[in-house]
Image (cartoon, rainbow, N blue to C red; front, top):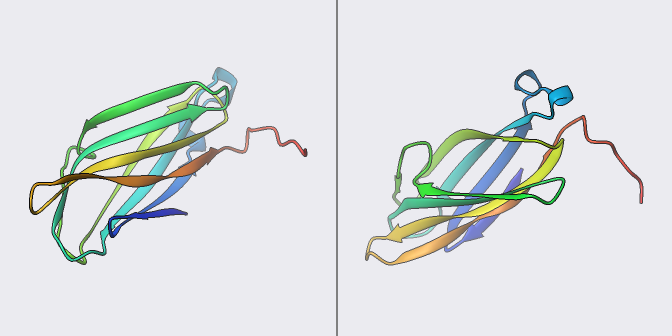
Length: 130
């Protein structure tokens, strides 16, 4: 698992390679990732936006921006958490994802929360010893 804490918001991500949805011979590799967002602070916050940066093994970068996550913009009171699972395909057997959530505090101030960089590894990635 990968974890980052920004402005008292803890984001934990656990990626899983989906062999049954992947087709390595066709250059299709699919991962699910489970995210848990915890409000460890003293003010209520709302997740407004997401920004992902997805980099494949060839260094190609795809950026994804949009409102909320999985169609929601959850409100997290102190001590609350929100969990969701999503996924991403790649054309290579490994990659990395990272990003930010755009949050809004009770007073209307906007701030970003770090989504920790996490590795997308499949059993189809050739291993090299350097």
